[in-house]
Length: 428
Image 1: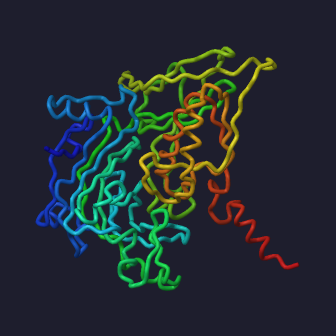
Image 2 (image 1 turned 120 degrees about the vertical axis):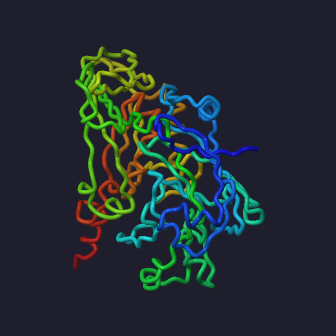
Image 3 (image 1 turned 90 degrees about the vertical axis):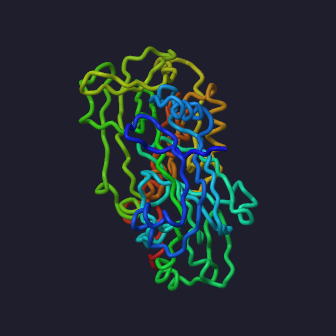
């Protein structure tokens, strides 16, 4: 069976397949300098990326016909991919990271923030999974596969196989390790040893894939909506300087950069370009009316790009006696649909919550999410993961947010833990 790895070509409007085999001889010639520093190498044959679901047709159409296909016209902002891999020296702690943008650094960066979790790479992966997660015989055969979900996050992706665990200091010691929630915790490591030596034992990069990208990385993704009139907010890769004259219901456009962040990891390994945030106000809506809407961008040359259709029902007339069904919760977080691990993985049950809300959406009028939204804690890519998870809800009914301590967790900014510390130091 021929295996293919989608890669970004000269025309960034579509994907095309390209066969990929990594050998020892190519490791020191084709990989970036920071990837050749690892003295340990393996042969990773036939690293393949195949695309499942609706994108299967897209991939093979392009392979056979070579014609650009705009996946966004089909309303796609997430897709499933299948990775197949084979290594000569497999181990139980091999893992695969998903990186976006696809050009990443696998060098070791010791965390400035003591609450940061491994892997301690200079580019934080969006998510990661052990190579044996869905291949129980991987350690014996060296062969495995993973089914992962990719979300359109305004940039391309690559996949990398690492050996040595999330930090390979565990493999350097003779003491037993405990694997818990994807984190390798060496029980015998003291705080002093941990802080002084961990940077000397980064995970070992074994191989990296070619680049894969969505047909339109700039595509819009709706996030939150509120209802007095109606506010629709979404993110995209289109900035103010690309916009034409505003018509219909215009949208304001904002973004932020490193300087808006308080500190690490948001300013360092956790930073990722957030794209542009657009907000439009739909005014003078008729009460109790089902409205259909779509998001779009008008460019300087007068052309438009439009995305899929959504629906919402406007609010009842003020003072009208009517049943309003309200859902209120907090501390939801997020979870990966494919079972992958991620930084600050505190709420694996969150997908049960969103799935239940989606299934019962016809019986819900408004949602209040009162604090501790997605537990990103400095890893900006996780906001895209969260908004994708709630998109079916927030694009249909008003989704009202309030910030919690995990949205204001930098010391001295009002986080309740800071208040607790102050109270704890008071002498009575």
